[in-house]
Image 1: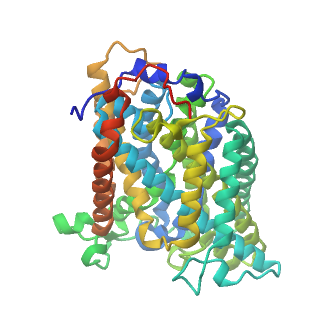
Image 2 (image 1 turned 135 degrees about the vertical axis):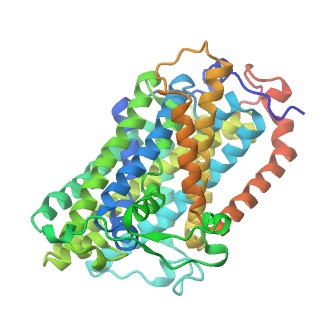
Length: 498
């Protein structure tokens, strides 16, 4: 058994032309950029700003957001080269298959399944909370039993979250172009809300709230046990609040506000001109959101002293503190709109990874069937949508949310390594976009990802390793024996047309 057999770039591209597995190329550079903005702007802009300013960075939280964008930018440059060179669905899974081999590709694909499914479920639960709150504001009360999973506030089932996931799943089955149009409308609404908050907030900014911009450093209370950051356990380095060390520590937290831009790469096979459009979508969405995040954070710490910012709703409460409660409702609308598109794009990425792995035979091949009318991988979309709906409706997810973060960072790390490997093994490949300063940029990307991963709790690492072990068992039990590279069917149209 050759665990490190690679699937050539040419073979990966050839597989996209199989009639029953061919996706429609309907997405432009603008569509991809809007997808990226849609998935990045979520709860991060409405919640993290206050938490990080209050506990870690003070008014300098804007610097933390910019530094986090730089960290993501390093990974984005690596993704841009890969996705334009190998314009195939599957993102990091497909890139790993072409560079590191089948077993590493399976592991990263299994990791992405966890990251995207769990991420979509967690965000849909957050959306449910915003939605129920909005209904309550207009006099409609949803019972706790129907808005929470078992074990959470007398919950039985989270119906709003289930309904959202199923509606989004149906939309994705109807076609990626329809999904992109709906996404564009909703993203326009939430960006307008964010811009309104920035412009309106400027009228209430007080210069005194920016002093000191970087407060004097002081130790943070240490967290013990499995909840302690791995860095603290391994090196005895305790968390620090404020000062430059606090600004850098905050990067590990606000980094997660940018998670999702890599999903643009999962739609590579549906881009009209992937060599040009994918780098624009990846890097463009990151630049736009970095500017918005930095602007929002500067406004909110200028409106209210960082020590008094709310942990749960910093933007809304900042406006309440200056006598403008109407903006709390506007921000809630932005939150609902923001989280809707996040669920949409996470499920889009999830179904494409599942589709790519099924087409390669590592999962049952019938899951890779494309709808004859809509040109979408409808079976993988429906199955994953159903799983996410069950997770969102019936499973308490709070303690599992950080698995999304470690899964994303692991994917970033693998892609960064893969760029260097493919440069050495296939220097002849035409590259429409080239990551600058290789191997320096990929090395910096790897180190930055490792730094952020070390700031995650020990329990998150243990859960992640358990998921990887389960994935390895499934690979050796099914994937390795049914892989099209193993069976010799790669490059030939399968007899089973689903």
